[in-house]
Amino acid sequence: MLDVEDFDAVFQGITYSDGIIQEILEYQHALGRTFFERLLEVLKITGRKIYPPKTPQQLHDLHQRIVSSDTTLHNKNCLIFYLLKDLSPLQHDDTELATAFAHDVHLEKRFWTFIEGLWALDHLDFPTAVNNLTHPSIIPTFPDEILLTLLTGKDKLGGMGVQKSEQDDILPLAYYNCVKPPLEDQKVRTEFAKYLADRNVTEMYHWIHTRPEHEHMPLLEILVEETLQKDAWGSSTDDALYTREDKAMELVSLPFNDEEEQHIEKYLTEGKGRTFQGAEDTVMIRRIAMGKLTDVAGETGTRGRRLDGVNWEVLKDGVKRGLGPRKDEDGFVL
Image 1: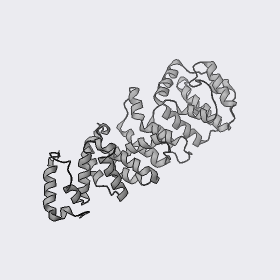
Image 2: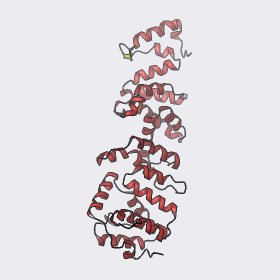
Image 3: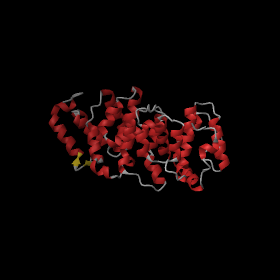
Image 4: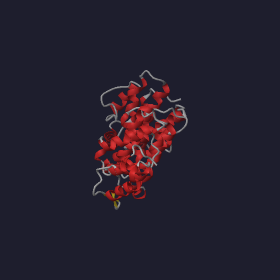
């Protein structure tokens, strides 16, 4: 069995080239920090800018920090396996350098799969990352951070001049469904809520009710904002199939409970949502859909406004005539 403490036996004279270092630095810049660095931090292997190692001596020092650290042998093997993944393109044997090492040290398949996934994630290869990191044998590690990287991945790839495949858009949902990240960080929770709202308004609404109660109203506000706020509208091919108008009509048809109804109406008439395009129209359509016709008849802010060719003033007058004397009754609901 290979002695992992033997630097020469492990690395076989191969060190980081300038090209590989530059590539890692670009990924590092896009991610903020790599997941390999997160592993080092969790295992209390610290040092100033120790990854990527820019010289043979720095690689030797990093290897020494790993093998002398107060952690399990399989953790040490995982970290070295990751480094060898970096170096494998520089080695030309039939068996990849990292693969040969994993076999030599009998690295458990679940650890092997996990590191393969993190390495792919650090190189913004999202399909490979999700394929590995959703394996049922893996205990979820950094689940919120991984999900956030998948959610913001398109921007990260764009910043590197790489075009992300439209098929990658399903990956955050696939990871979430398999791993069930806790979404403890508000930023992660917000980004995932925006992602869900963009995909399907109704599914987003039902997902909200799977979350703790104290999150419901803030998440509902995100749903409304993503549906109505102009800045949130996308420009992808899918937007032509699932238009803002479709989303807005779906929103006003949701089965809000009384508390949600009151909160959303207040949000759209008095809160931040009042600045959204179509906010008042959304409230009016919702009142009509719920049969709150006296509220519609008493509306004073619709004069001269049109929505999809509908003149709200004419519509309001029609409602008044239909209600007759009942328009003055409190709480008249169909």
